[in-house]
Length: 325
Image 1 (cartoon, rainbow, N blue to C red):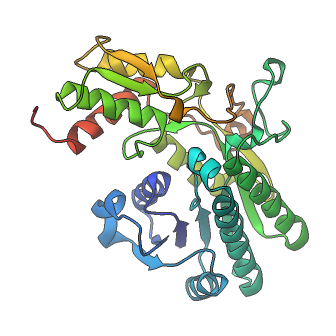
Image 2 (image 1 turned 120 degrees about the vertical axis):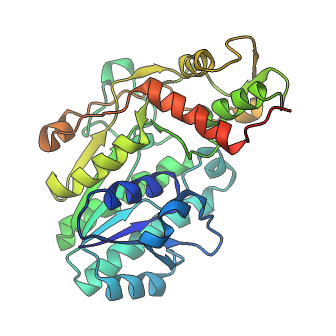
């Protein structure tokens, strides 16, 4: 079997590669990267995978890869995913995410590879929901509140159109919040963990800068997400949409204080709101209903929230070195 992962050097892509390589099957793993991509997340598996330099917005480049490899499965994870950046550079976000998705779909259609395509959408497509609309399932209306969510909504519909028109073997996941080691510190939970470790090591004053702490989120470990993505391509129905998420629900403020409880600094820190971290519009209530996905796959999360938090702190402790200043 041949598997192609776009965005393999990223957070989710690297863990998906880890999971597939650990299946003890005869699977060839290919991954796309840009020439500027950091290989840090896949350094430990680089000799077990085949990396392909490709600008996914370039149809000719995507055509060449798909036609030569003819992958049995494609996991399309590559995207501009950072929401504040989507506000700063909306056109780049829209063009990057939609064009790369279109290029993959077109390549599979043209070369008739029969590839199973997993498109990684996002819970952000649901935008603002009212309390009576939760938990959120596949039938909730899409009301995107930021350019990233708009791009994912458009791709989501595009993938569904390619199923309706050409019967491509597509599957769409709308995954809710996930966490774990390797996440960049541009994301709130990882930023909190990094700041806490910097305080532990005496690298900064005991002040943590935050954005909106009132948003309600669910948190799923990235390693459980990787398993879910594989099961999606093994057991789910082509052309369908699947909500994937955790039942661990809390305000962002609770996550911060749980990290502090697991740290050596406790709650002896000051928390300050940084206005630069506040979004022009925010999604404040995200609680998923994953029952459709669970019923078809039998999937259940295995890694506890506390373990995810501990692993995240340890990741930053390792990244920032062992010695206190």
